[in-house]
Image (cartoon, rainbow, N blue to C red; front, top):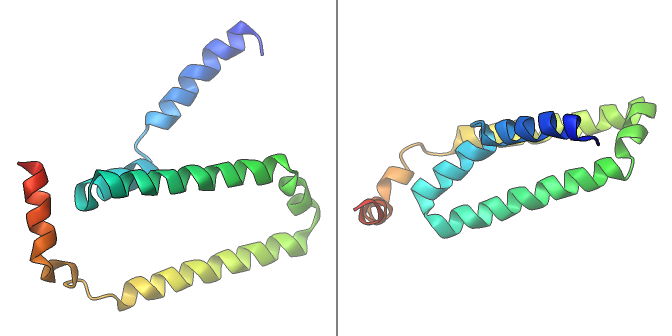
Length: 113
């Protein structure tokens, strides 16, 4: 990569990483609700997930998925089923259950003070 391309590529990467996307919002949410340590563990999990995606892409999984329509369709169906499972779990949870734990709120107030 020449210097001109690199001088355009690096600021674009920085801007994309600093934009408030779902991973950044999850990190902020975890740190405010559960503390620094839990947020760091979740960040490591996201880092490992990205490393896995990069490894699969570099191993040629994208080429296999482009050539095999049935495999790609199967992965889409499994992904959709997983999203429906997550939606079902969210539908069944009691929205007031988190408010019933006053100790958690006191811990957050102590950290904020």
